[in-house]
Length: 524
Image (cartoon, rainbow, N blue to C red; front, side):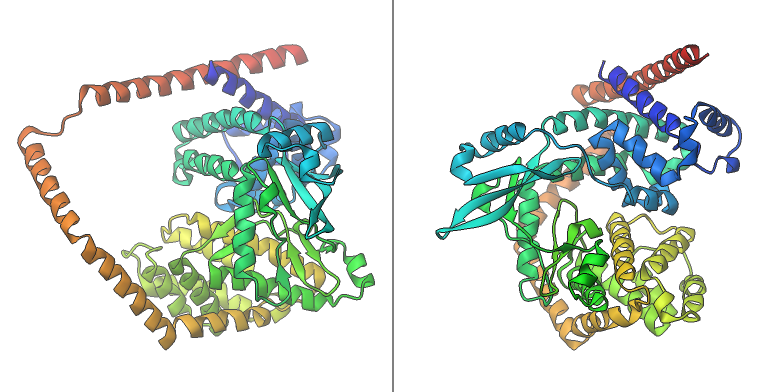
């Protein structure tokens, strides 16, 4: 029954996308066979007034009709241009995460249930909602701290959003399984794995304690950074369903007119934004991954304050070194070094030729160096780089894709503030400084220290590893003598899973077929 319900919800979502003209806006002329027939039918069923809108507007209207969980799906897919394509990712990134507010009384109920205290004990004042998104909404409130009234922002989870999301998640998994089964070319994108990532990231985002922890971590790492900070967290008034944090008095970065009227230096703000983002990425390996202008405020002294840290990105030391070296390699036109870094990181299989790969990278870098510096996009360069690496069997790196998506947004904000923004000149001090500090003598010493710690940890595990090796040797001998065997429970579970997988696919296809017949009957 769960599969049947997921099938119905999936068909409804497809019908909404068709009626709002989203499917018709896709480049269907490039298709052939049944996909092209489906695209033509979708054009027939599109609302006439929807044809007058741009594709991004059609997408926004469809997502609003489908509900909050589809807004979150769209935002997630915007971080995966490797899955949906660059054009569609840009359209999805433009989705406004603005939903209708829910009643204040429901927010009060959620807060009291989460914190186990009455609203009057927590806040001296608790106001109406000031903003609402797909997962939560924000209220203005006041608390008493150190004997003084303090204004705070209170973020509250939307009632019923978890249940609704996990219902829709069943539909997403069904669509992913059908895609893997019937569209072989899509299997390299691993749609089921992508859906599992969506489920995990949204579970994290729906626990506001984890967002509070991310704010706290970023706040500590940027404590001494000039011109950038995040709001402080009130842990006493924070739980799974509620996050209380410092109220930010500032101008949103998308309000250019107000920034100019307040006398801010827009070029300096653009420089500060890019250098802060690169500093967090390279130095800390932890960055705000949703830095659209609605989440960025500018205070009276020019300090940038970033809010809404539900989506954060992390890079390990290897990924940070990879990023710094390829950016610096493009700056210095050392294309062979850029190619070598890909091989050293293990991103490109060894059967490929380094020189041939360097030649492909040169095809990206040389046209860029022929352009004025202010027109060069670092985000576009990374996009082209990932396209070229596909030709050399580079596996998808989700953490780098998220970084590239965030860089597209941040660079776009900077160019809105300063149309003649020079990305390379701004980035060079941060990138060059990180390389000199981490890849020079000081970096070698740090690597040696880390290697020594790893060796010491390995030596401590030697006795346990010896016991495991002896046990594994005995099991391999038994396997060689008697063959590989499954116990009865494992064999039964495998058979049951296979049967359920086949049955779910058949049921879903019948549901879709019957629904389409019903829709056609109602129309004609």
